[in-house]
Image (cartoon, rainbow, N blue to C red; front, side, top):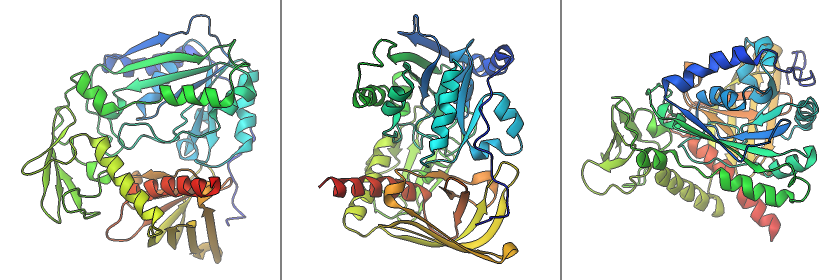
Length: 414
């Protein structure tokens, strides 16, 4: 597909950051404006090179990451769409390009170069913004990575960023009191003695976070009048009537258009039914209930999604290529995308088996163009696939991808 189009050069060596002080000055306002604090734990004597793993909830994460690492140089993994129109800038500040949820051996080589340079290799292992302020699935390879590079592992868990600017509505809510904890969880003298499995257990333990629980415990009030708007993108199924894809939001309310059940979204991030049963006051509980329902569909062999789609390709960092119409099927076999690119008189076909991707990247109202989309990747291409069905949820597609993968693994283990 698109054989005549230049691809992003993944082999170009990562650049070392040059003037960290300038970066520090551009990152500092985020901390000051949100009255933030960075706490360092067990970091005494820990110097680069090391692996820095950070949770991912909003764009502000990148600024806090840079401040936590200062004055040391770091490189970090960035999805290819982050490079659009600014490849030179991203490379110069340490960006390393990655196509999401692909097994890219070349990325390992790039990371190794960073470690050999004596710098910090920073990674957002969740590989996307959290949909509801809780831990997304982590890759199983993190422990092996630490063993391979023979360097310490440091985590950076940030709080308040999702509350300030959730993925489903990026409006800045001017939240004050954001916090970050930078902690060395695998020390230099432990790298050689701990197994990859033991390192993974430590990482998983540190990455247990819940932004809405944190918000309530710290009495963080969000007074933004449109604070509920967009929440229906995540909470797509009504727990009162069980109808999917008819949830809607306006102002501070979440409502099911099918049965009329309505919830108020409080300043403390809690939900309460205007009348009748609330079902879920805690947003992550609602989200996990949806996951459970998807899991049941998967295990019963009933999960199926099909839609006509609009497809955009991003082979390099220059611009999107509009491939036009196609068809997407997502089922027990994985993703199957077909289409016809009129410009090249070319039919294309993409199959991604269930076992090849443990998760998938999605976007809500991506770039304000065609609505919500699913981001499908190979090592050479990134395809933004926009379903054109009247009613659907990319959140459900995301949950199904994860549950299909886990179900496939469970079958193989038997």
